[in-house]
Image (cartoon, rainbow, N blue to C red; front, side, top):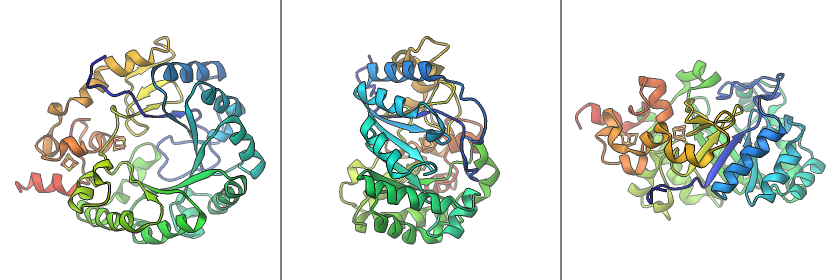
Amino acid sequence: MNPTLIKPKVAAFEVTGRCVLHCRHCRAAAVEHGTDPLDTTACKAILRKVADYTRCLLIFTGGEPMMREDIFDLVAYSRSLGQRPVMATCGAGLDRQTMLELKKRGLLSFSFSLDGADSLAHDSFRQHERAFALVMQAVQAANDAGIRFQINTTLTRLNVDSLESIAALAVSLGATCWNPFVLVPVGRGDAIRQLLLEPQEYERVLERLADLKATLPIEMRLTCGPQFARVARQRHLPKAEKVGGCLAATEFVFISRKGDVQTCGFLELSAGNLVKENYTFGHIWERSPLLCGLRDLSRYEGACGRCEYVKLCRGCRARALSASGSVYGEDPICLRAQQKKEGR
Ligand code: SF4
Ligand code: SF4
């Protein structure tokens, strides 16, 4: 193995494309009915091959992972392999008893999504009249069952004025971490790309997030906002050196519901299919032209290719692809990219 190559520290496994909600931004474009392409045996083979290669945090995601009948079995199997299983869920179908059973099988924590500080904001974004109530029930159940959870929030122009309120809500609910995600307009999210923040607006949001990170009593992580790595250093935030840019193809891997190895769930390019390629996870991770290319920063183009922060930040490859048609292009929401284009 190339000595500079890192094995993934976090793997997300999209075990289903089914979900009871119909969220506006859903990259998986999840629907309620359908058949999961991977059966239990195939899922276990994938879990085993990933564990053979790297012991990591394993995120069960979807769609809604609780829609799989074998989810308890998969969680237990993942834990038995030495992985650290966690689950990203909308909260549907999760009562205290279910959570205790998942905990018994080895699940370590949940992430619940809250995209607004109240039911009006959250339910309209999630396109379900009880979405907020479902999360509140799941939070209560997690607290009762003694399982840790974090709150995820998709940042868009709709909720950008409420960031501080949503963060405060996450704290009051007992979350261990508040984890905003910057919108990536793929899947159903393609239809709401007008909700992407403009570069100036986004830069102000990064400043506010830096203030929150410095003052919140719980952890705050920003996902898919790689420019925060720059802002954290410019603002001299505590532990700024631990705030990284995009981790796709370096520390993070995504495995789709069909078994495709991807950089992340938002970049819908396959580095190789585990089922068709005999579950050779390590081979795909180390040799795939896509993953090797994305690790080679000299290939980056446009403003990102000329940027002094590229090693730290890397820009969002999925937004670059979506905006310019090139996975090596520039991240359209970045202020520094805009300045570079203006020759500054
Ligand atoms: S490519 Fe973009 S969406 Fe994917 S992990 Fe990186 S920042 Fe996030
Ligand atoms: S131009 Fe690209 S590499 Fe530079 S800060 Fe912006 S997104 Fe990051």
